[in-house]
Image 1 (tube, rainbow, N blue to C red):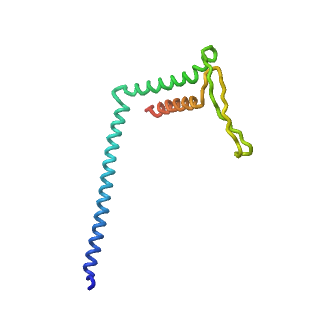
Image 2 (spheres, one colour):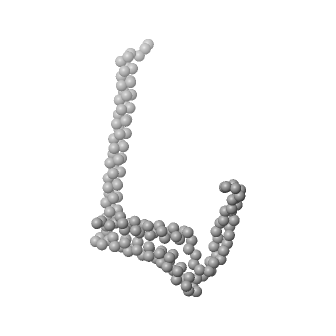
Image 3 (cartoon, rainbow, N blue to C red):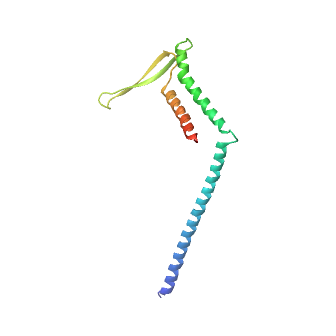
Length: 148
C-alpha cells in the first residue's frame, strides 16, 4: 500500500514550514542580539564619554597625568644621563649583549654573549623605545584632543 500523494505533499509542507519557521526564529534572535549589542555599546560609549569628560575641567587631570609621565621619562632617560656624565655619581654597570657571527650568508653562524662593565648610566634600547612611545602617545593624544 503506497502513501497517497496528498500525505507526501502534506508531510513535505510541514517539514518545509518548520524549517522556514526555524530560520525566521534564528533571524529574529540574531536581530534581537544585534539590537541588544548596539544598546550595550551605546550605554558603554555614554559611560566612557562621561568618564573622559568628567566634571568641569575633568580633562585637566588626564592632561597632567600625561605630562608628568612624559616629563619624568624624558628626564630620567635623556637629562639625568647627561648630568651624571659630568659628575661622579654615575655607578658602574655590568651588562650583556649578544653578537652573531656568520660563516656564509646566514648559515653556520654562532651566537656569542659578551659581558662588559661600564661606568656611567646605561640607556638600553628598551628605554629608548619606551621614551619614544610615551612621547608619541602624549603628542598624539594632544593632537587628537584639540577641538579647534
